[in-house]
Length: 230
Image (cartoon, rainbow, N blue to C red; front, side, top):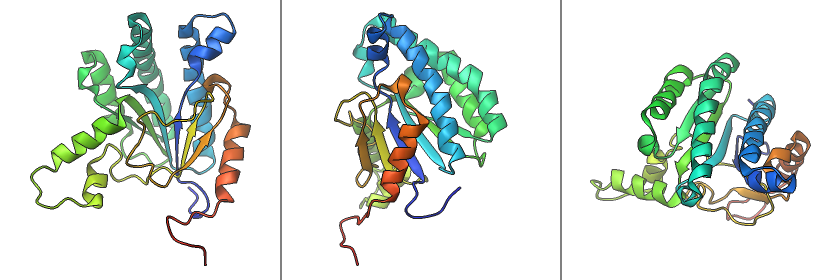
């Protein structure tokens, strides 16, 4: 993995546009979500092959339960299929898989698959893939604060350590595909100094070329973290 300070160590992506991708092709939204899963595999391979150690993907938010029941059911089914298919693949590729979010509300089979993914891939050194599922940034902060309620004084470091991403670097880059210009309750605490890129491309069409353009732009950016350049 690269250690150049101007090269990202962690990229996070809000994968938006699956439904519109399908609508533009007069297909059901479910087919757009299936195509989006294929893009996960392609972009994850691209990120890790470029020496970037962490990739975090926003797959299903705490607000997504408000979508039509058929779509929610389809997304849950796709997540389960993804885990079944990719646990052995990621193990072979030496990639650790984490699921970030409250998975306790999911069905027993999915919870078992999440646990199995962690047990089989934890500590693998080829990269870390985080899938945010039933995740919300505000809920994550509430969870963190509640876990520290016994402390008399809470520091920023204390909060960082008990977030789902505890022990990981904050994202250097956050990308949102699909043309919307908001972060939608994603990594609210961790994104304080992230470089944010909004791209019009719908997630199923997001390419390695666009990824490389973002990385190049980031590498040319003077990140001052509130300070001034020397």
